[in-house]
Amino acid sequence: MLKRKKIYNPESTEHVNDRKIFGGNPTGIFELNNIKYQWAYNLWEVMLNNTWFPKEVDMTRDVNDYKNLTEMEKAAYDKALSQLIFMDSLQTNNIIDNINPYVTSPEVNLILVRQSFEEALHSQSYAVMVDTISTNSEEIYELWRTDMMLKNKNDAIARVYDELTVNPTDRNFLKACFANQILEGIYFYSGFAYIYTLARSGKMLGSAQMIRFIQRDEVTHLVLFQNLINTLRKDRPDLFTTELLDEVYDMFREAVQLEVTWGKYITQGQILGLTDEIVEQYIKYLADDRLSSVGMEKLYNVDNPIKWVDDFSKFNDQKTNFFEGTVANYSKGSLNFDDF
Image: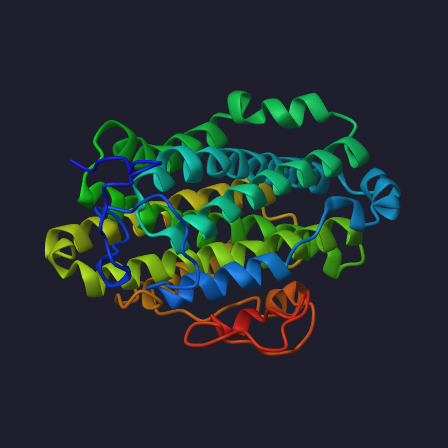
């Protein structure tokens, strides 16, 4: 069983090279001039430089754009927004209450705390979008209860996290890392793609800009859990059994099925640029990309059918690679999704 770390542990004599992602014996003091996982501290600096606030985004034009959407477009916008609201709400608590208590590396604690802050900020962003644009804000916030398709999906997302809550073992911690990778890298990206699709046709440009800021944060969250998994593969290879990896593949298959069903449900084949075939291929592409990033085999071997989404999500073309060394010449908005 995993043990929660002590907040204050003066008896510890753990040296920096003895640190572990979990199962360590930290003092509780953040000695950030002497760290083990350089990638974590570099990511912390990128996350700090990404700081933004919802008030920076002008939503004025979206008010009129929303009124002129078709009924199908409005329904899909509202459902996509409701799903994003659920996921950021879940993550705000999950990261702090369910993941971080077992993490014994101070530099990783830093970025998990920062992620939780960003998830809360995203919840505020969605509140701004809902209250500014929608005429049925209460209904949007209640969809997670009333829309059975959405509830079924949300229940499945939360199930793996609950395993760690109820039974905190090394194995379930690793599974929760994969579950976070699925959430950050498949479910969120699918929801973002719909908002970008509207913006591509000249509608809801303020919403798309808000999502750009949010997605830039989500890139760092995805990188965070990719690095946790890859670090654990080196530090704890005993956890990566054939049985565990088979279970992870099943998790990805279930996630793809859930998201494909959801994507087809909210678009109903009536959203320009998002046919059922495109929705399904895009989600399978996302799954393959996330699997390969942690050294696992692709399941579907498909190309990205909506590459223009990548262009929509970028702020500029400046490159940055913070995995191996110090971040240099970084400025707000410079994170490029192609680097991951």
